[in-house]
Image (tube, rainbow, N blue to C red; front, side):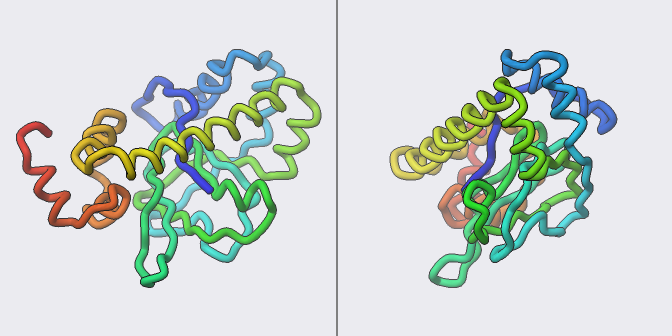
Length: 209
Protein backbone atom coordinates (compact mmCIF):
# COMPACT_ATOMS: atom_id res chain seq x y z
CA UNK A 1 0.00 0.00 0.00
CA UNK A 2 1.02 3.50 -0.27
CA UNK A 3 1.21 5.52 -0.69
CA UNK A 4 2.29 8.94 -0.80
CA UNK A 5 3.58 9.17 -4.31
CA UNK A 6 5.44 12.18 -5.47
CA UNK A 7 6.56 10.85 -8.82
CA UNK A 8 7.83 14.16 -10.15
CA UNK A 9 8.12 17.43 -8.26
CA UNK A 10 6.21 20.09 -10.16
CA UNK A 11 5.76 23.81 -9.93
CA UNK A 12 3.29 25.14 -7.39
CA UNK A 13 0.32 27.35 -8.25
CA UNK A 14 -1.34 29.72 -5.84
CA UNK A 15 -4.99 29.17 -6.75
CA UNK A 16 -7.17 26.10 -7.13
CA UNK A 17 -8.23 26.88 -10.68
CA UNK A 18 -4.65 26.27 -11.84
CA UNK A 19 -4.33 22.81 -10.34
CA UNK A 20 -5.48 21.06 -13.51
CA UNK A 21 -2.53 22.73 -15.24
CA UNK A 22 -0.30 21.27 -12.51
CA UNK A 23 -1.45 17.75 -13.32
CA UNK A 24 -1.09 18.42 -17.04
CA UNK A 25 2.45 19.67 -16.39
CA UNK A 26 3.31 16.59 -14.33
CA UNK A 27 2.13 14.23 -17.07
CA UNK A 28 4.04 16.23 -19.68
CA UNK A 29 7.15 15.98 -17.48
CA UNK A 30 7.02 12.19 -17.80
CA UNK A 31 8.38 12.69 -21.32
CA UNK A 32 6.60 9.71 -22.86
CA UNK A 33 3.18 11.21 -23.54
CA UNK A 34 1.94 12.85 -26.69
CA UNK A 35 -0.56 15.68 -26.36
CA UNK A 36 -3.25 13.16 -27.32
CA UNK A 37 -2.17 10.79 -24.53
CA UNK A 38 -2.38 13.57 -21.95
CA UNK A 39 -5.76 14.74 -23.20
CA UNK A 40 -7.10 11.17 -23.07
CA UNK A 41 -5.99 10.88 -19.44
CA UNK A 42 -7.32 14.27 -18.39
CA UNK A 43 -10.73 13.48 -19.88
CA UNK A 44 -11.31 10.49 -17.59
CA UNK A 45 -10.10 12.15 -14.37
CA UNK A 46 -12.97 13.29 -12.17
CA UNK A 47 -12.64 16.23 -9.75
CA UNK A 48 -13.78 15.52 -6.20
CA UNK A 49 -13.85 17.55 -3.00
CA UNK A 50 -13.65 16.18 0.55
CA UNK A 51 -14.28 18.22 3.68
CA UNK A 52 -11.95 18.22 6.66
CA UNK A 53 -12.15 14.88 8.53
CA UNK A 54 -13.88 13.12 5.64
CA UNK A 55 -12.56 9.71 4.64
CA UNK A 56 -11.42 9.12 1.09
CA UNK A 57 -11.60 5.40 1.87
CA UNK A 58 -11.95 3.37 5.05
CA UNK A 59 -10.38 0.08 6.07
CA UNK A 60 -12.35 -2.87 4.76
CA UNK A 61 -13.41 -1.18 1.52
CA UNK A 62 -11.79 -1.93 -1.83
CA UNK A 63 -9.91 0.94 -3.42
CA UNK A 64 -10.76 1.28 -7.12
CA UNK A 65 -9.14 4.66 -7.79
CA UNK A 66 -5.91 6.64 -7.89
CA UNK A 67 -6.09 10.30 -6.90
CA UNK A 68 -3.95 13.35 -7.66
CA UNK A 69 -4.14 15.87 -4.81
CA UNK A 70 -4.89 19.32 -6.20
CA UNK A 71 -5.01 20.97 -2.78
CA UNK A 72 -5.16 19.89 0.84
CA UNK A 73 -3.41 17.26 2.97
CA UNK A 74 -4.37 13.64 3.62
CA UNK A 75 -2.91 10.86 5.70
CA UNK A 76 -2.98 7.08 5.35
CA UNK A 77 -3.22 5.21 8.62
CA UNK A 78 -3.90 1.73 9.96
CA UNK A 79 -4.89 0.32 13.34
CA UNK A 80 -2.04 -1.45 15.09
CA UNK A 81 -2.21 -4.63 17.18
CA UNK A 82 -2.44 -2.30 20.20
CA UNK A 83 -5.56 -0.65 18.71
CA UNK A 84 -3.65 2.55 18.03
CA UNK A 85 -3.80 4.64 14.87
CA UNK A 86 -0.47 4.60 13.03
CA UNK A 87 -0.02 7.32 10.42
CA UNK A 88 2.36 5.86 7.89
CA UNK A 89 1.84 8.17 4.94
CA UNK A 90 1.28 11.91 4.46
CA UNK A 91 0.20 13.21 1.07
CA UNK A 92 0.57 16.87 0.14
CA UNK A 93 -0.57 18.89 -2.89
CA UNK A 94 0.77 17.77 -6.28
CA UNK A 95 1.23 14.17 -5.14
CA UNK A 96 -0.68 10.99 -5.90
CA UNK A 97 -2.68 9.09 -3.30
CA UNK A 98 -4.30 5.66 -3.24
CA UNK A 99 -4.50 2.47 -1.21
CA UNK A 100 -2.21 0.93 -3.77
CA UNK A 101 -2.13 -2.76 -2.80
CA UNK A 102 -5.93 -2.76 -2.65
CA UNK A 103 -6.07 -1.01 -6.03
CA UNK A 104 -3.73 -3.55 -7.63
CA UNK A 105 -5.25 -6.67 -6.13
CA UNK A 106 -8.89 -5.55 -6.08
CA UNK A 107 -9.13 -6.62 -2.46
CA UNK A 108 -10.22 -4.83 0.75
CA UNK A 109 -7.67 -2.44 2.17
CA UNK A 110 -6.22 -2.44 5.67
CA UNK A 111 -5.76 1.33 5.61
CA UNK A 112 -7.90 4.42 5.96
CA UNK A 113 -7.25 7.65 4.05
CA UNK A 114 -8.29 10.69 6.08
CA UNK A 115 -8.63 14.29 4.90
CA UNK A 116 -6.84 16.48 7.46
CA UNK A 117 -7.98 19.61 5.61
CA UNK A 118 -10.45 20.30 2.85
CA UNK A 119 -9.08 18.31 -0.09
CA UNK A 120 -9.57 18.67 -3.83
CA UNK A 121 -8.41 15.77 -5.95
CA UNK A 122 -8.62 14.37 -9.44
CA UNK A 123 -9.68 10.71 -9.41
CA UNK A 124 -9.26 8.07 -12.08
CA UNK A 125 -11.09 4.79 -11.55
CA UNK A 126 -9.55 1.39 -12.16
CA UNK A 127 -11.62 0.42 -15.18
CA UNK A 128 -10.80 3.67 -17.00
CA UNK A 129 -7.16 3.43 -15.95
CA UNK A 130 -7.01 -0.07 -17.40
CA UNK A 131 -8.55 1.19 -20.64
CA UNK A 132 -5.85 3.85 -20.87
CA UNK A 133 -3.11 1.29 -20.25
CA UNK A 134 -4.44 -1.06 -22.91
CA UNK A 135 -5.02 1.67 -25.47
CA UNK A 136 -1.71 3.51 -25.19
CA UNK A 137 1.90 2.22 -24.92
CA UNK A 138 2.82 5.49 -23.21
CA UNK A 139 0.22 4.96 -20.48
CA UNK A 140 1.43 1.38 -20.05
CA UNK A 141 4.97 2.68 -19.50
CA UNK A 142 3.63 5.28 -17.07
CA UNK A 143 1.80 2.55 -15.15
CA UNK A 144 5.03 0.57 -14.81
CA UNK A 145 6.90 3.70 -13.75
CA UNK A 146 4.19 4.48 -11.19
CA UNK A 147 4.48 0.98 -9.72
CA UNK A 148 8.28 1.14 -9.61
CA UNK A 149 8.29 4.53 -7.91
CA UNK A 150 5.72 3.45 -5.34
CA UNK A 151 7.98 0.56 -4.40
CA UNK A 152 11.10 2.75 -4.22
CA UNK A 153 9.37 5.37 -2.08
CA UNK A 154 8.00 2.77 0.31
CA UNK A 155 11.40 1.12 0.60
CA UNK A 156 13.01 4.51 1.30
CA UNK A 157 10.39 5.15 3.95
CA UNK A 158 11.08 1.82 5.68
CA UNK A 159 14.84 2.30 5.50
CA UNK A 160 14.57 5.81 6.92
CA UNK A 161 12.68 4.48 9.93
CA UNK A 162 15.41 1.90 10.51
CA UNK A 163 18.55 3.82 9.58
CA UNK A 164 17.91 7.52 10.20
CA UNK A 165 17.44 9.35 13.47
CA UNK A 166 14.12 10.99 14.26
CA UNK A 167 15.86 14.34 13.88
CA UNK A 168 17.05 13.49 10.38
CA UNK A 169 13.60 12.18 9.40
CA UNK A 170 12.08 15.43 10.58
CA UNK A 171 14.67 17.47 8.68
CA UNK A 172 13.90 15.51 5.50
CA UNK A 173 10.19 16.13 5.89
CA UNK A 174 10.74 19.84 6.44
CA UNK A 175 13.10 20.06 3.48
CA UNK A 176 10.54 18.67 1.06
CA UNK A 177 7.27 20.07 2.44
CA UNK A 178 8.03 23.11 4.65
CA UNK A 179 4.88 25.03 3.68
CA UNK A 180 2.54 22.22 4.71
CA UNK A 181 4.06 20.70 7.85
CA UNK A 182 2.52 23.31 10.15
CA UNK A 183 -0.93 22.17 9.02
CA UNK A 184 -0.38 18.61 10.23
CA UNK A 185 -1.55 18.04 13.84
CA UNK A 186 1.28 17.16 16.19
CA UNK A 187 -0.09 13.70 17.04
CA UNK A 188 -0.23 12.66 13.37
CA UNK A 189 3.20 14.06 12.62
CA UNK A 190 4.71 12.26 15.61
CA UNK A 191 3.06 9.01 14.56
CA UNK A 192 4.39 9.40 11.02
CA UNK A 193 7.92 9.98 12.33
CA UNK A 194 7.63 7.06 14.73
CA UNK A 195 8.25 9.14 17.86
CA UNK A 196 6.31 10.52 20.82
CA UNK A 197 4.66 13.93 20.74
CA UNK A 198 7.04 15.03 23.50
CA UNK A 199 10.06 14.05 21.41
CA UNK A 200 8.64 15.88 18.40
CA UNK A 201 8.04 18.99 20.50
CA UNK A 202 11.70 18.95 21.51
CA UNK A 203 12.76 18.66 17.87
CA UNK A 204 10.53 21.53 16.82
CA UNK A 205 11.88 23.76 19.57
CA UNK A 206 15.45 23.44 18.37
CA UNK A 207 16.78 26.55 16.72
CA UNK A 208 18.06 24.49 13.80
CA UNK A 209 14.48 24.12 12.62
